Length: 321
Image (cartoon, rainbow, N blue to C red; front, side, top):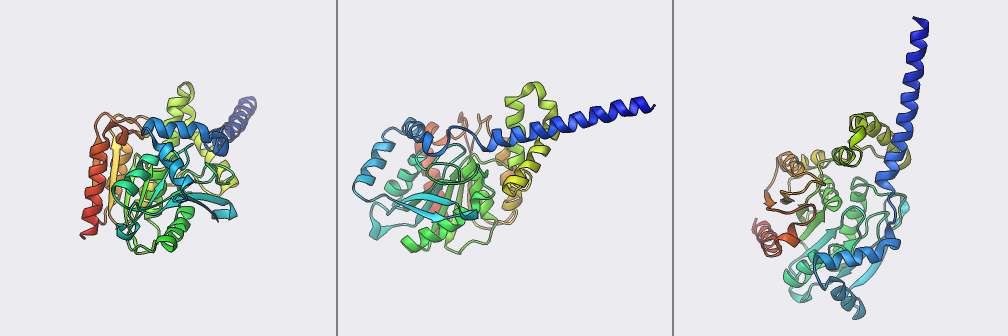
């Protein structure tokens, strides 16, 4: 019996050690991807044009004429974070301000189609941040929206000080959408009137769980203990746990209007996430659009006119409330 107990103890110790190492690997794999940030700018510029041709030429022209400007502030945990901003196409008749938040491994270049939509079609002022560890922003690792929301909340103040609007919408895609949903449950200024989330996940844990199954199918049965270990590493290194980074929990506290968008062919952030998110928001106005045939972060590219019209109509409804 003692021999059996010793063998079991050694086996358990080995499993725990393996789990710790696997957890550390998983945390770094998920949050410290390479290449990233400034080193990856050219790839993301190309991605912006692939999503909407002419995006970077539009961006470069606005930069050259001094309309689109860079700014940097001290963000969460004293890291320097970067954003670009520009006034509406017709500043005297500006309809409000939009903050557009990018996704995982992206930066402020990637979703220029949304920036153009808000500025040139809706006549909104725009501000577009780089989240930590992305673009021109500092940071030790991706924060998956949970700590990023604090930086976005600082950008809300910055944008308001620049444009002095009484109507602001936060619009995010993928991890940016999760960031927006996570911010929506916090105590925000009254001029933040609306949110648009496009293909955001229900929680960091749920997203890592799905990614693990897709990326490491041979050891998918181990994902529970490995993710638990990775969450411990994340909490030790960065100060947050996978399950607390929850869109669902934050949405339960949100009472301001939100438009939920998700592609029905999305397998990176599976479509069932949007139903969890939509159902979690029990207070205030909400809309849901499932974009036919759209894969992850592809709803605009698949249906640009309908996407634009749905966002336009949603904002008009909110303004009329």
